[in-house]
Amino acid sequence: MEKPRQQQSSPELPPPTEPNPGQNPGEEAQRTKVVLCVECKNTAAKYKCPGCSLQTCSLPCVKSHKHRTGCSGKRDVAPFVPMSQFDDETLVSDYNFLEEAKRVVDSGPRMRAQLRAYSQFRLPFHLQSLKRAASSRRTTLLLLPSGMSRREKNKTRYDQR
Image 1 (cartoon, rainbow, N blue to C red):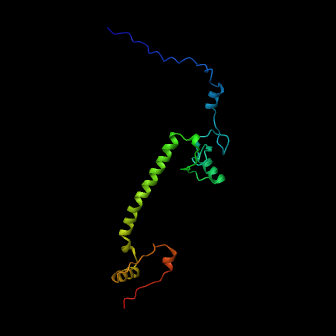
Image 2 (cartoon, helix red, strand yellow):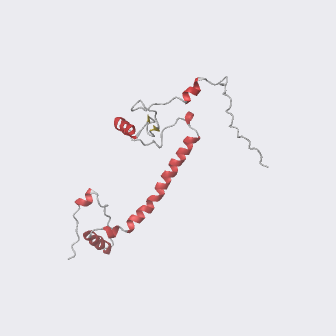
């Protein structure tokens, strides 16, 4: 014998809630209020500029905003925050900023060591011979990096005769 199937009832919607006595009835309307794009002013905004918090709807509007205002679109990583507005989110943001700075500082000596290891092989022949002659006379010769204008102007050569 087959059991009769029970019909699945759809979940009942909760009854509409009345506003609390301390709650502003217009507050709900403000939360659902559609914000228009500040550039075209006819479409609902989807994006928020990290640099200045203006709201836009599309890529052309973002580009127009950046061109019109000169905004870089980059968030200020260390803005001034008064103590009255300082909260956990601000503290985490500051902590992350300091961790990123520490990471960059720690990677600096490693990068210099990597670049220094191959510097002699990248030198042109006339500078290699000049550096060798200086080191044979127990003199440390320091050269400016390539691309610097003073290094380009310097025509010092070593005459092996």
